[in-house]
Each structure stands twice: as structure tokens, then as C-alpha cells.
Length: 383
Ligand SMILES: Cc1cc2nc3c(=O)[nH]c(=O)nc-3n(C[C@H](O)[C@H](O)[C@H](O)COP(=O)(O)OP(=O)(O)OC[C@H]3O[C@@H](n4cnc5c(N)ncnc54)[C@H](O)[C@@H]3O)c2cc1C
Image 1 (cartoon, protein in one colour):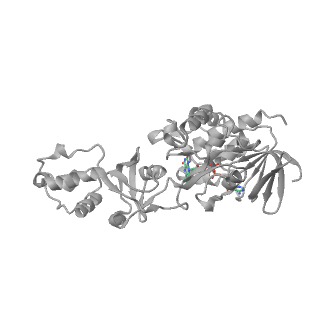
Image 2 (cartoon, helix red, strand yellow):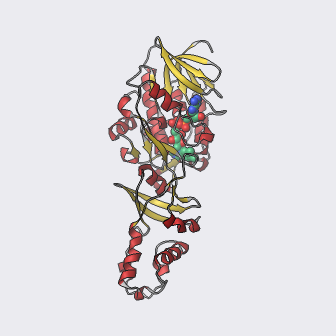
Image 3 (cartoon, helix red, strand yellow):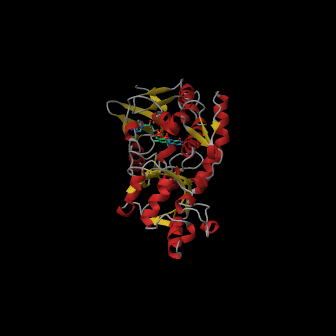
């Protein structure tokens, strides 16, 4: 391709495809390193893609709340649902306001591809680096180079390398003078220290918890896994966890007081699966007897399950993380247009930016909203 491209988009994932979809008749070329577009969309939400959420506020994100709010307001969850409906996809609301595709994530991907049908998508075209000379961007692939007037970096984060994750977004941003906020795997399971190794024997058990990490409380299911702990509450907690302790309330909303004097067996009154209550009693060295016979000291130890603190050893890593937290600092990006404040014509959208959402459709909503702001600005440019 020898011609000068009007808008080059690096990455045919959620944010890149949405930016293209909203650029209608513009001259757009999408560069995708993978053999197919939207690989992450297809595996997301258990194959049904959790597209957005009924409640989307900056509180659901790690990142500058003013920046996040300004971007989300322009194209929020309702706008996204309407956009999909207009194209024949009526998303279905499930538990906790999570919206999913009715049948499969491919319904959403098909729409995004259809909306990009007038644009060129070059698959197997991995961009290695980008430079700007005399007002034009040069995108260097592995074999060819391309010229473009504007570039949108929609290359995502570092998680799931098998699905095409690559650090190009960060290296390009850095080469244009941008600051990168430290990146780390997020929405990921946490590994254990020796003292909690007994958790591993509970692999497959799930229980409701509240996890406190710093000032954040993450509620939902905790799943004991072979490598450590996982499940929605843990994934959310991993967003805020850096190092140090987390505190788990294994008995949320429960009070032993109601049962004091009871003749019931202790393991039967704890609101958790029996396998778990037995393991905890063994760990706390409390015999499973009738509640009435518990000593004050034993009661105190049981109530310790409401504030079970420990320091995770680490995370399951990028190979299991749903997203990458950190990324290109929003301090150097224009919130109205997603354009770099360091280089005119260079835009950043989606996960590559230092904004990361909790579990529940928030990361896709960020991809849609940031893509909208970018596309709106680009559509106003004269060719
Ligand atoms: C298993 C899993 C399940 C998930 N489920 C959900 C969910 O249900 N709801 C939700 O909100 N979020 C979910 N997420 C997170 C969500 O998928 C991402 O936040 C979202 O896809 C980010 O969109 P993006 O466009 O920024 O990046 P991506 O969708 O990752 O797209 C980036 C694209 O850029 C391409 N690329 C990278 N480097 C280059 C290069 N050098 N040259 C050319 N192309 C390149 C990649 O191949 C990829 O196609 C899930 C993630 C995973 C891994």
C-alpha cells in the first residue's frame, strides 16, 4: 500500500474496531497483528461478552476519575445499548446489571466488522514501531511500511499474549514523550503464602465474601483454585492490590450473636460450604461441637473469619489476567478527543490508556466510550 492513509488504527480489538465503526465513510486502514480481528471479544464473558453494565460510574475504574467521567459521559452504557439495538443486537441484562450478547460474542463482533466493511483491515500486519517525519506518520510493520496522516493506537494491554497482546502501544507512546504508569496484571487470581496453603486443598469451592484492599471493598464470590484464590471478588481486589495485606470477611452480613446458646453444630451454622467451614475449624483448631459449648476464646477466633488478613504472594500473572492496569498516563491525553498532547494526530483508546475497570463490562464500556470520543474528533477533520 503506497498511498497516504487518512486514519491508521493499530489493533482490531474492541476499541480499534469501534473507532473504525464510528468513522463511517472516512479513509481508514486497521492494522491487526493477529490472523483474525476481535479475538478477545470472542472469548470474553464466557463466550457471550459482557458488553457493558447498567451502572457505570468512575467508581468502577482505577484511573483519574475526572478524566474517566468526561469520557464515559460522552457515550455511556445507554448510548452503547442503543447503538447495538439499532444494529439488531438487544443485549440481555443478567445478575448485577451485567449486559451480555443474547447468544454469543460473535453477534457483537459481526456488527463491528460489518460497520468496518468499507474500511481496509490488514490481518497478520504487526506494527513494530511508528515515527513522524514532516507531518506524516510512518508505521513500520515486519516487512512493509505505511504512511498515515493520523494514527489511533488501539493495541490493548499485555495480558493474554496468545490473543495478540503486545507492548507496541506503550513503546510508541514513550517514543513520543508520553509517561507510562507502571503496568501490572489485573482482574486476576492471587497466589498464596505458606500459611494459606491449606486453601489449595479447597480447590473448586466457592463462597461469598467481602474483600477489603486499602479503601476499596470488593464483594462477591471467592473461588478457591489450585494456584490460589480467584472469582469475581478476588479479580476486583487484584485491581487495587499492589503489595501487602488484604482482609477477607468470610462471613459477610452474618452475626454469631444470633446463635449464642444454640444447640446446633458449629459447622452447620457458618454461612459457607461445609467443606470450607470444616477446613477453617481445623485451621483455627476449634472442635466442631455445639455452639453452646464454645469458649469465649473460641468465639473470638471464629469471629476472626470476619477479618481474615493475609498478604498474597503475587498474582496468577499476565497469562491469566483479563486486563492490564496502568498504561499511558491520562495527564498527557486530551479528554475530549483522546489525542496526545505531545504529538498532533496521535490518538490512544481502550486498555492501553491508564484506565482499568472492575469485572462486569466496565472495560468494554471504556473501549466503546474512548473510541467514540476519538472517532468524533477524527470525523470532524478535513481530508
Ligand atoms: C478472557 C477475557 C475475558 C474478558 N471478559 C470481559 C468482559 O466480559 N467484559 C469486559 O468489559 N471486559 C472483558 N475483558 C477485557 C476486555 O477484553 C478488554 O479490556 C478489551 O478487549 C480491551 O479492548 P482494546 O481494544 O483496548 O484491546 P484488545 O481488545 O486487546 O485489542 C487489541 C488488538 O491490538 C492487536 N495488536 C496488539 N499489538 C499489535 C501490533 N503491534 N500490531 C498490530 N496489532 C496489534 C491485538 O492483536 C488485538 O487484536 C476480558 C478479557 C479477557 C482476556
